[in-house]
Length: 425
Image (cartoon, rainbow, N blue to C red; front, side, top):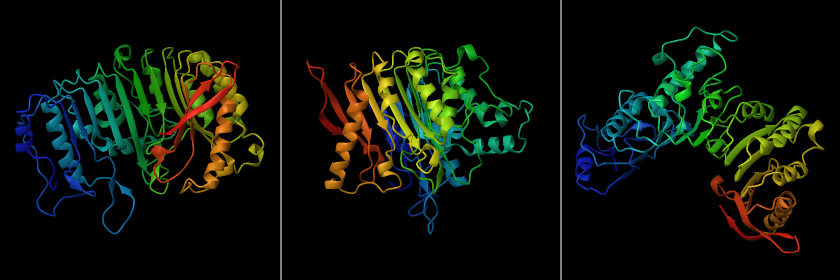
């Protein structure tokens, strides 16, 4: 609805005692600009009366650039101010009951009031672009390479401000940082805790996010230190790409080299981990060696693993790697050493599909390729008796969320393994 959510509607909704979830699809701004088609965007009252909401989501994560151009851009200053102010007033008014928040990443600091008690919050998901303040912090680090900058006040450093907000959420169970940055944004703008510069850290590391069970960080950079401060009870860890689509013409979606991922996971101590999702790149022989070490270590480091998702992006242009792509032997060994693994999802970056556009239709070429993919799946899972489902990544259509083709795994009394009841997810 043009103009967005308004005060009187919210106060009317407060009369509905069973209303607990609010999903806002009507923006307070349109296509990155304030809405002026009919009226100015609504501003919510400072003294807002709201329902006893437990879940709020503002479903405007990425915005377009002004008319005449294409792609994704940052919100204009006045849009940030209007949306951030409204979200802050709305969420602060129901903070006593709020358990679940999903908002655009750009509004992290404008929507979450550090003066409010967030101890009841269980889930925080930030999606879209990292706040502009992280770009300023990155520029500060880049201006003094190799130097340990003097500690700065928390209010002047984006990483410190984020950590301070998280310390106000001691009962958080799920923290999902599903954000990317624009190509024009400075390098290293996606650190939660960077290895250099002011080096912010939680004020009380022994109490930091002690109840956290799920953590996801998109656009992770080499040297990220946040894992060192997460609790040993963590059950789900993800390093993914956001969005799933490759938008390199607009966004910078950094994906770790395997040597970098290995270094990061070597600092992880999560013996109760059940779910791991990783993206990494095999760029040279060093990455190939790092992958072998990493896969050898995973079953020992995470013995309770039940769900493993791997996106293995391979450098098919490297002459030295040309004969080393085959992932079957090392991944078959990996799966054979997990005792509890139920689900394995694998993007093997098949050289047969390198640099090709996604399939458009499920015709003969696609069907032949699916036979090839099923053969890879069977070869990899054959020695993992606990496995119940397997998914293989193939690109068809234009919605990346549906690129997984999954099967149930059938096991027969004579030891044969088969793929059954295939489905798309």
